[in-house]
Image 1 (cartoon, rainbow, N blue to C red):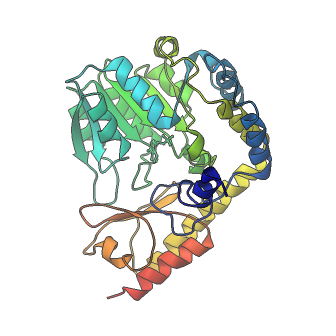
Image 2: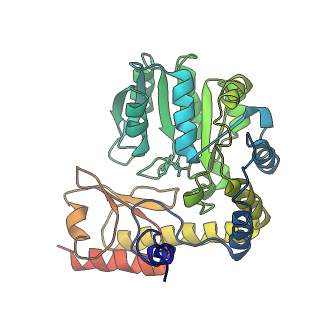
Length: 342
Ligand code: PMP
C-alpha cells in the first residue's frame, strides 16, 4: 500500500459515515451517487485551472435560487463569504456585534479582521434579544444575526427581524446568516432579494456545507446589494474556487429531489429526537436546523456524554449542541441521557 493509500485508509480523511460525529452540524449522508460520480469526473481535470472568476457557478446559483447574478458573491463556504465581507466593510479596530453564544467562526473571523467583538447574550430559550442587539449596533460597523441561530436552532419571526433591521444604522452591515435555511419550513423563510431592496446594508449568507452535504468542498455564497457584490467580485481571489465547486453544485441541483428527501429525513429525525428527549424531561430549544441545543438547566452535558463516545459541541455554561444524524446517532444520544438520569 502506498503512503497516500495508507493515509486515506487511516486518519487523514474522516469517515463519511460516523454516527458519533455530532459536533460540527455536518450532513450525516455521504454524497449522492450522481454527485459522487460527477465529482470523480471533475478530479480527472485537476491538472487544469478552474474558471478565473467563478462566473458559471454564479450564473448557476442565480438561476436555480432565483437570485439576481449581479447581487451574488461566492466564497470558501459561508466562512469565506463572511471573511470577504468583513474585509470589504470594516477596518481594524471597528466593532462587530454578535449574539452569545453564536457560530464559533464569528469571534475567530473578527479576530482575523482585527475587529472588536461585542457579545449580546441570548435569552433562556435560545432567542435573540433583538432590542439589545440593535442598541449595540448603533456603534458597530457590522452585526451578525443567524437565522436559524447556531447553536440554538431558533428563528426570530420575520416581523421582528424587519423591526430590528429598521433600527440598525444604514451604514452598519448586517450579516444575515442563513447557513441552515434549507431546514426551515417555507412559511418561515424571508425573501433575500426583497429584504435587501428594503435594507441595502444586509448581506444574506448561505452555504452548500449543511443541507447539500458538501462541507468538504467549501462552497458558500452571499446575496447583497449590487454595489457591494460588484466591489467584492472585483476583489475575488483569481482561480480561488476549486474545479469541484461548479460540478458539485450542478450535480446537486440536478439531484434536488433526492436532496429534499434527505432534508425531510433530517428534520423528521430532529422532531423525533426532541420528542424523545422531552418525554425524558429534557428541554431542548425550538430548533429549525439540523441540530438540537440542550441548555444546561442544572446539568453539565459534557459529563452526561463523557463515556458515550459521542462528539458534541459543549459550552462553558454546561450546555451542548448535538447534530441530528441518522437513527443510530439519535439512539446513542438517548441512551446516554437515559443512563445519566438523576
Ligand atoms: N454560519 C453558521 C451559522 C454556521 O453554523 C456555519 C458552520 N457551522 C457557518 C456559517 C460556516 O459554514 P461553512 O463555512 O462550512 O459554509
